[in-house]
Length: 133
Image (cartoon, rainbow, N blue to C red; front, side, top):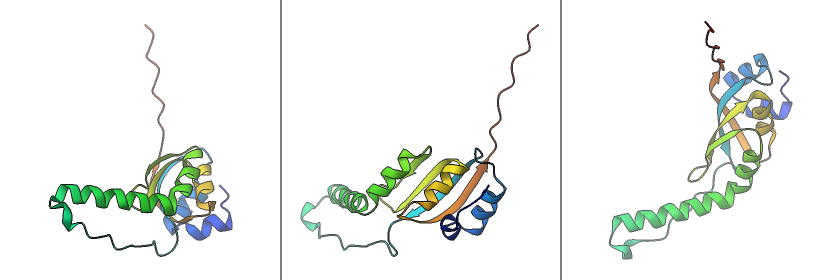
C-alpha cells in the first residue's frame, strides 16, 4: 500500500513496514500519540480541603479529562469519524485505533496526530460454513 510522506514521517519503522506490505483493507491496531509536543502539563490545584482522598482523586481526574479534551478533543472526534474503532484519549494524549490500513494512513495524515506505533496486525478469518448432510 502507498503511504504518503506525511504519514511516513509519523509512523514508527515497524508500522511503516507493515503498511508498505498491507492491502488497504487489512486490519491493524495502532497506538496514536496526539497533541503538541510536549503535551501540556499543568499543576493541579490543591485539593487538601476535601479531606477525603476519593473525592480529591475524582476532582483531579475530572480536571485532567477537561484539560485533555481541551487540547486533543477535536482530533479525537475527527478520528472517530474515520472507519476506525477508537479507544482512549480521555485522560492521556494517546488513543488505540483499530481498523483498515487505509484509515490508519488517513489518521496519521491528520493534523494533531504526532506519532503512530504498531500494536498488531490482524488476519480476519471468516467462519466456515457448516456442512450440509
